[in-house]
Image (spheres, rainbow, N blue to C red):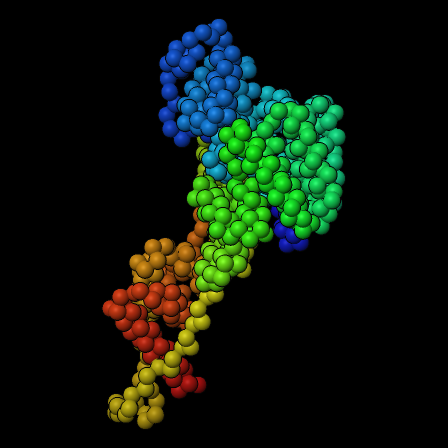
Length: 585
């Protein structure tokens, strides 16, 4: 019954039900699924960690782990990720000595590792660590720890575009915090961010208002200002710049009262954007000068988003050379895969167009579109990688429990549901990737008619005149396999990718999921005569060869001639078979 309900939810697009079923699908409630997750390498010796990093510790293992976690947190705040990882390795090494409180500490270590992976843009690994932190916290009846881990998990799920999963995690975290009387502002703000990403602005504003009330009730002015910034962005996108400006000024005042100059500098980005949206270039110029003065006084680096707004003001003032220098400087210092890169490139294209450099502007705009497409594909790949991480974790848990490999009816319900979810996610991701691609698939040339000899040789004496010579089925099958092998080999040599990529991009062969791995089983059957179907799809084989020829213009002449000869041979055999069938009829 559960399988049928889940399948109907997939068909109808009811992702809310899937989000509610997410903990069951992931097996996150079972801490045994998280054993061995802490690190991919050998942990240091616990005695060395205690002697070198905790020389003044009181001797209580729990206090030692807490001290290591605090030091790791300070290292991450100082952008010393390598030191943080070393400290977390030691925390992992000594956590087993904590006795009855080991589960709570293990959850804290896993959550910190997840935060470190999140900073490094390793989102699938981070989410798995957050899931395990929640599982260990549940096992220890630590509601606060569970709520914190689920909040982190929901934030990461939103980053990879798993909005329904994010709502499920964040809603559970909110319920736990409310039941415990804890702070809810951060969770409400994250829920609002999810609804904003889904395009539901009114619902998002409702949650932002709740987050604002919660932060003010606890006296957290910085968190309140952060919520105000988000509310201003939503209202500005909805076409209400006056309200957005009022909220941004409130946020700036909150940051100034708290002495947070970094966040105060960030608010100027929104204020400049609002002024430009209202057409008030003078006000935009004033906020720009205030931002530059603040950054200069306190030696603060300009965020890339603020540099973008500065360049827009310079373009509006006609200072195109300065705008170009500002944008090129921001792009040069930008981290890899930063989302603001697309906006910076588009603004640079606008500056180049205003300078009369039409060719350069078009090239820059094309580059921006390529980066946007690459970011979308990377997000899809992260979602697929997340499903793979979950599936492999469940398989590892079953193997440790002594269960047989998942084959046929031996597959447990959780593993079977994971496999089904992985298959659905793969199908949707592949479909969206094809729709998002800006490079159209080359038009395949029509299948040429088989060459006919100028004068047919006389039939053998025993054959009636007009009946074609008998076709050789075995030779036909051998030529099909030879052509497919040559096509795959040429594709791998010219593109550096696999046969799976050939099946996916050509759209001629189905890609499916087998034990958590993507396979092109239909294509693979045409790589061996023994596995070739009794009624082979010879037209798909010929079209595959044509696709390789079209996609690989740099293929050497010998390989192209080999593929063309294979196509001609297959077509000739197919023609002979068709004539034989007509004669038999």
